[in-house]
Image (cartoon, rainbow over all chains, first blue to last red):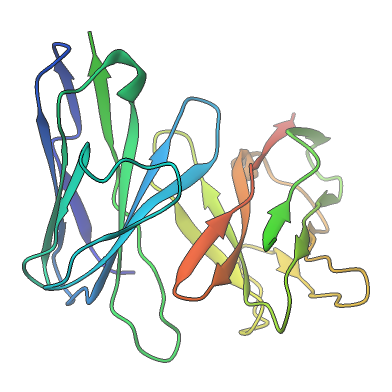
Length: 116
Length: 107
């Protein structure tokens, strides 16, 4: 499978601060990037979809001004959680897709965010 | 609404016994369905997709349009099969996940 990395793998921050999470597709070009959130013992919930060079499309109920997504290149996307609060504590997972006939999505290892 | 339902949160099966993880879907049109697996402390990975009709790690899943089901099966469970299993469907360009079933293989 494809190699996808996320940085950092975990982060602890104070309430009110902003946190940036990077996602890199190391061996293929990700035309589309999906960002998911996974709360403890729950499933992955899609937050937003972004295509390289375009603005992200957010799922219903996800605040676009709180979760800023940048997909400026085919190998890098970032998710910035602005003014984080304890309820934002979660596991954030990126999922790049290279398109193509199977349009397979690959998954990053995730970033665990804890907001104090 | 297009969604997948996994009715079991937890399934415990003895080693060597058959496994069936249930998945039902709701989709207008021809669905594209997947099973993903997440082992402890590892990332999510694709187990199989219905269009390829392949068997991975002994698991198979058949799409039953009449019953709108895509159950995951394995004839003989192994201890290393213990993991979280997610049924998923493609909705447009997005993959939507079910809530998952934790499979626990008992020795």
